[in-house]
Length: 216
Image (cartoon, rainbow, N blue to C red; front, top):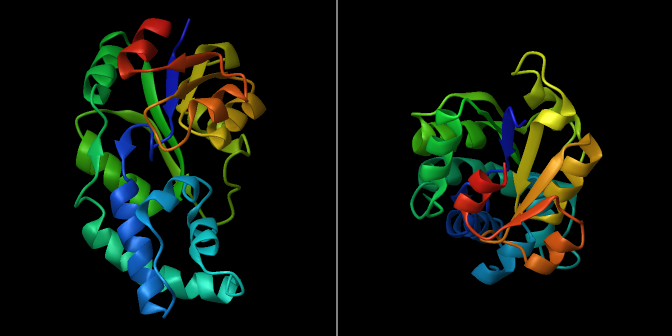
């Protein structure tokens, strides 16, 4: 029986790629570096904000100092413009309605920085009660470390690993769920490919949000 569904955020609940790419290009420009094509960002996101910056920086400039400089410009810009083009994927609100009506708890486990994660969940999904909203935080490992799944499970008393499903759009998400010992659902509407998801043997592959509701 499923008692908790944990969702990745970017590429799973929300299509955020345009706003992420624009914010990262803004930071690159402010630091004097060349911009990236928007289609390049699909493979750069999902591994935490600092890795995003390091991937976006040109060869020979991929230093932590440059990434920290980019963060100074990225965070204020993204805080102001992070909802310009972002939207829930079609069928996501209906999925969340379905799960909550069945008494299934919801949680978010993202590699996006905590402030950004909380803001987007409140902005787009404020009507829903998430037992945990977890992003990247100082002193906490990022996915695919399974600690974030265990933290999410603490929001539901008496829960077991068999009661949990983890949903995401990338190899990092599939590894996170596997490392935690829970069922994984790969979603095909996100930033990565079916092949990437299938390579990590998900418990289920969802073509639409409705498929998730039916699978569990």
